[in-house]
Amino acid sequence: MSPAQLFRGRVLDAADHWRIDLPDPGRPTSIPCELHSAYERGPFKTCTGCSRDLADGCLYQIQKVVRGKETVFEMAICQGCGMRLYEEFSEESLEALKSFFLENFKPSPECSNCHFCGFPRPLAKTYTIVGICQKALLIMPPLVLCDRCSESLQARISKKTRDVQDNFIRSTFPGVPADLDVLTSLGGLM
Image (cartoon, rainbow, N blue to C red; front, side, top):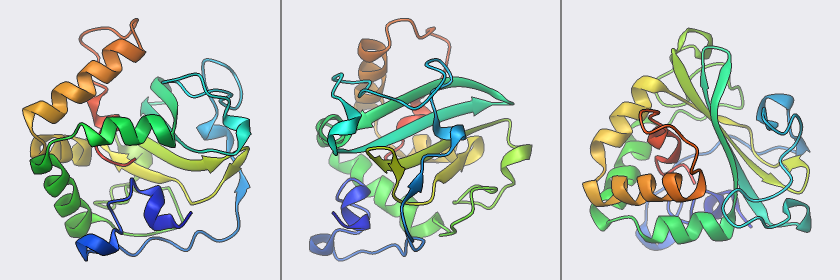
């Protein structure tokens, strides 16, 4: 699977004739500790959405929302669950996501700054870090999205898509407090 397909089949979709230059994926590396589960105290083992064994070779994405030094939300989601969620997004939102990436994405193998505005990650109040993985390997450098860019991205998507995101969060994570804003973690990075 190409890096194009890793970004939900949309970021580098030849049929749509749009392109974003991704950082050179280089050689796969071990998944760094910052992408391990804070709650399981180690690597993610199963898909948060469907409980699929992540060691079976499927592609999956790890997303963690970090506030200060505390992980406030995390998930590992297999490509199948991610695609099902993505297919529910409105066309308006898909275009908004595409536009956001085309206008703002700044490729870099480093994850010390937001990949969309360049804001230093240590100074961000909240940020999302995303890793694309297969088995126990990180197959592309992690992406960082600061809280300001998350808010900007969420402001572009439709109510329908926000509702899809919210329903996914609430049904998959029934213990998530109602006042915890975790939608920024699902802003189309999958």
